[in-house]
Length: 455
Image 1: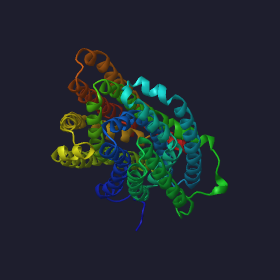
Image 2: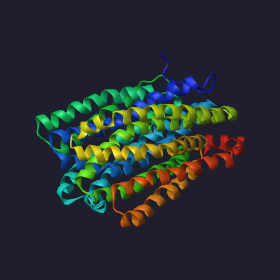
Image 3: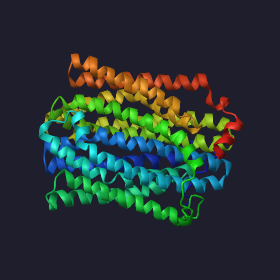
Image 4: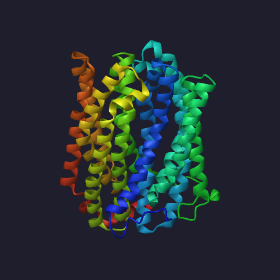
């Protein structure tokens, strides 16, 4: 069966689904790594261990999302090159991206290991879970190089139209992750370090799998060992698109660290409840986000091919299908919310508070889907600075202001949750207005498109 989706010809809706649904499934499997960690420690170690793992969610999100955003630069550069049928740039982008992923991953691990305790202290992790939180983060950081490698490898496949191969990699490593969780915790009697090591090893396997698939691929994205070098022009273009996207993701993560700090101040029960709810709501987010990433790649390839009307059609199809499938995911999670939350922890108070979080977050998705798909559309043209600026002001700025003012006066869990629909509402409206008034498909000149081929 052909792995690459032809984004340049024929109908759009069916091809969008062929690309987006495996992408959503891949994101969900990635989240199952962390969900399995929390479920295992919650049931076999205790509430404090569960809170320790959950307290790292926002920090890990900041580290990983920054470079996941940068990997979108690889996705867009390869998508543009595919649209132009520029095999030379595809080859250079593949090798440059893999080198960058490994080097930056090692640097990030070293920095994180040094500052791990300081970072956790800044997020007000309670004393009774602090040592376990540090232990989990230190072990997890050892796997950052292979986590980044997997994400850049996935971006290479996706830029050409293949989301099934990254899904296959995660499916295998996901099963291994769950088995290793049980082995380390139940058999070897480890705590949070055991589930962190399971996550590291499973990510290592998925990144190795994708590397060998690229090494033996017959497509243009094939790795050739003798061609490994950093191409400065390609790296510059990847970073021009990817760094603002990474900053955009980091803004969300920074804001979430501030929010996590406020949640931590409310005690271990609220921390555990919020962590459990997050590991459910994120499944619906990955469904929504998959259509945003799909919009980026479809728009990128058709922009590279000079087919601007098809770019506009892509945006509206992705928005319509994204709303439909996200609504289905939300309905399923809310319908079985209490039972699903109990998988992580059977404490009635944990389940009750967790369900409150689900209600507020999913209401905010009304605006979030506009932001995700709208940002994806703009990135497809290589416009990534404006979405990053919007996230800085309307997401990060609003959430920090809210926690420092409103929450400090009314320190309740509900007060924290209200900031999600407020901030995402502003960001969604801002992105849609940007698309309406800037009309990026019309302002992009042929000269600018050709410039991306050589810059």
